[in-house]
Image 1: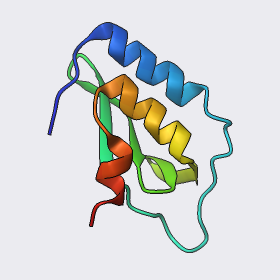
Image 2: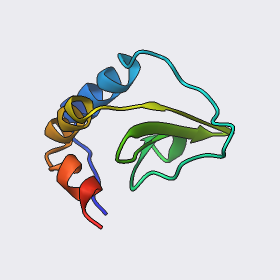
Image 3: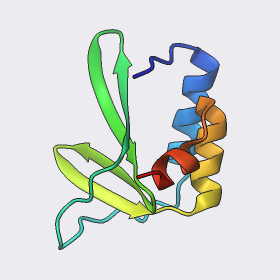
Image 4: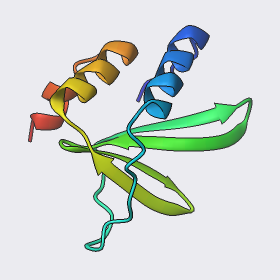
Length: 92
């Protein structure tokens, strides 16, 4: 677990998430479970979450939504947060 408090980094994460193609949907087969989870707070108030799986991004705030993600997108998010998300997601 790691806490990210750097405002510039958080802003970059939010811009990245908001720039996704907005193809969110509720999977008929049930929600996939991400391996990496981000929680966003404004002070102590929970605002939203975001998760990453090996081939998808997800949001679960009331209802679960996901959309397909490709390696380049996962690598870009990993670059923002400062870790190799792709390798972590591919590991067993």
